[in-house]
Length: 221
Image (cartoon, rainbow, N blue to C red; front, side, top):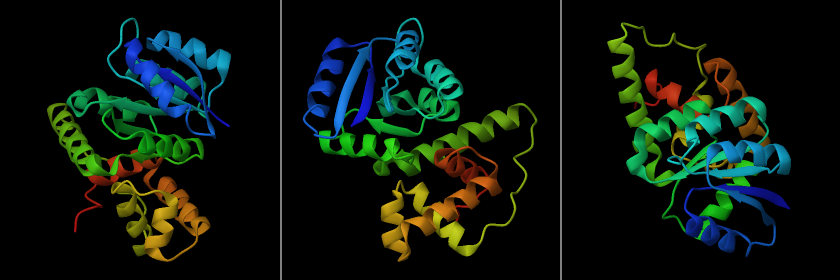
């Protein structure tokens, strides 16, 4: 069973999501809390596999909670579950260590599959908004760097042509299974390419790899 913690300050949303996810035979909602501080305490007590995290909440918002969970419980996958209007909060959440980003208007099937993906160690940005998120993050990051007079990140060790193919597939929000099918390789080969990409870009996860690649213009063309 995949253990899930729900974090949202609206009781009705928590109850609705819990009801939908509990219909899945392999998913179990082990807790539901209304703010980030309570989320940290709940993760320590319940040890879920995945946390579905809202952004705007009282006491401690989702960004601060995600940052703390990423530091203290790196094996727990955090998925930001919000609206696209929360742009800057979402980008901060991704930098804080969230493994995924979903809109609240997705279907229950899509949400369940996202939970499974993150529970299996993968990361995702919802395909329908992946390019928008990456492009907007790049714009904000570049503007911030320019204002501070900073340089863009140094170029990484050269990626192979196949690693670039995998990186572009990640930017489209594809899972390892989908990438393997598209490139006609095994999932094990895809995982090896992703490990090499993370090492060369000097990043922690797939989401940050895509964000850094966008800054370095590796996804152009």
